[in-house]
Length: 166
Image (cartoon, rainbow, N blue to C red):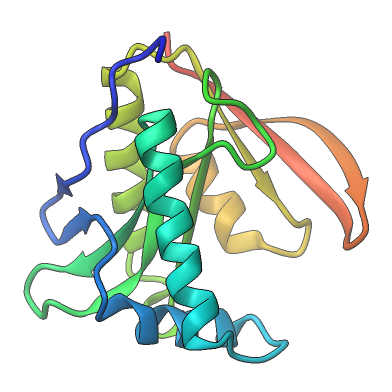
């Protein structure tokens, strides 16, 4: 690995970002169901978590479960992933339950992940967002991301944003 691994536990004033656990499986299934298109099976979700753990061990970056410190409930995930980018310039990704939108949790979690990326010595992060996702654009704007280009895939346009970490 050309970079040291990012910490697998991050704390903010209100949140803990930590590795996935078995109880997160059902909560994540509910989060995925909010997107529309149904709820994945328990087996599919367990496989996703296992794949995340394996990818993290291989790359030194991770998508982490986001838990509110005062309540202890799973509210989503945030972290770094290869995604459409690379290990050297990973993608920051986050998704939270709609019921917690508008409370600054995504910005708080993503800011902690951004700081963890800086600590690994990386020079740049990417993010990809669908054009309709105004809340994600607001989070990324607060974190200093700039639009880079637009590509198209089988689901339509995809806006690529980047942030220099130097």
